Length: 306
Ligand code: SF4
Image (cartoon, rainbow, N blue to C red; front, side):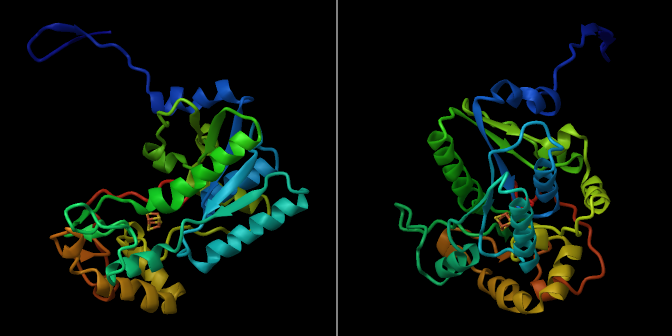
């Protein structure tokens, strides 16, 4: 296509293929039968719908298993939802087994590090590296390591082991992103590893998932994320919900962590730290009527809702 620019020149505009939304969506298919397929299960609404659809044969090619990575800090309703899925699988005679993996207790490990037990080790310069939950240093998020350490690595470690044990050479990771969050669907660059997004293939939104559950006679599924997740707590509505639904955990986990993180200088973090980008103590933050979440933030990727 020829287009005239502001200098009056005619320039040729070539149409570029969008790898993420089209090429990326289909690329797993060439490995369909040569790959071990695992479903990244966060046990929130979207990944649970993907799992139930697979169990009901509504998605082309069944996954070999589903893997739930437990950070130890999920809300109780997530464990109930996980148990529901395990029970549904039993009714089918174990068609898609669910494995639970864990790399430790994210909040417990974070608190231990804050209290001086360097569970993530010292850096050569004598300082300590922060590897716990994501924090807002001032109003900017710190590099997120919790997703990698507590979700992605333990899940992929088991997936690789199962791939080898079952004689496959490739992995296909089923992820539960919907069209509301298509920007998070990024194909992996490794040669033996492909992502698949069955809900995107169906052009499903989060609301479509809720409707599907209702239409098929399943209970309502709620979100999954760590109780203390600062990506989620940065949303006023979510923070209020956690305080209302889990008042004890609010006091014993959210407030306890919040009170411990202001000074993180021993980890080389010079800004004052908070669990929200408004830089407020959580008990003050949750009293606000409304906020403008101006800063772009994301949720946990793999199975944290993931
Ligand atoms: S839900 Fe939040 S705190 Fe938990 S692993 Fe994901 S990003 Fe980290």
